[in-house]
Length: 142
Image 1 (cartoon, rainbow, N blue to C red):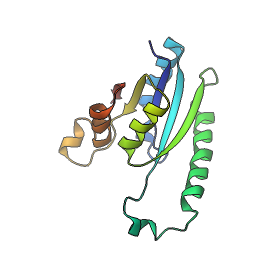
Image 2 (tube, rainbow, N blue to C red):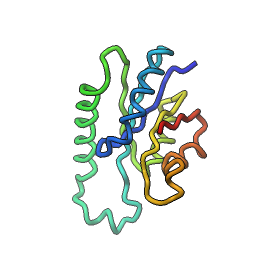
Image 3 (cartoon, rainbow, N blue to C red):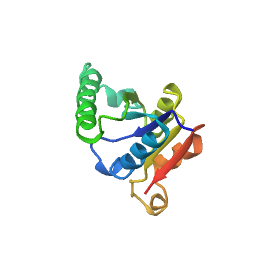
């Protein structure tokens, strides 16, 4: 049923993967699917904001993310799971949607972990946007 399961993670926020990773791993094993781990590198929508960062900031940030992803995989993902990684730019929900299309994911498994205001207790702002805008099935893990 599933060939590629996408798991978006925030490497600075353990709650973005702590409950969702075991579910994604179980689904990968059950369906013989590969795990697509995606991390979003935020962009700075306003050129004025971006001008305060060094010109090579994005390249250095992307390289640091690659290293952090590899460390995460070594520590958290068993060897019997086929893993691919991606780093996408943009807002979290837009990056997840973009990655799911590019990687041809069959299912997005993600945690609902942000609790900023009362409405966010239900699902979380990024998860809500992904659910509403994704063409793929989305599983929210609480």
